[in-house]
Image (cartoon, rainbow, N blue to C red):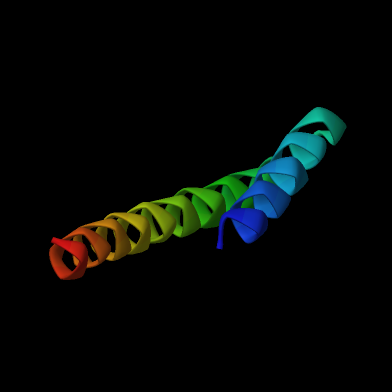
Amino acid sequence: MLYWTLIFLVIAIVAGVLGFGGIASAASGIAKVLFVIFLVLFLVSLIAGRGFAG
């Protein structure tokens, strides 16, 4: 999940540098959503792992 977030972030940066504002905006929006999903899944797995270990 984090891998795809970084891919879309790089696409957004390259598109922004080249002047493709719409594509850069869409790619950065997708990167933000994927990063939030990654954080939520990471925290859930962290809490679940802590609950079963203790």
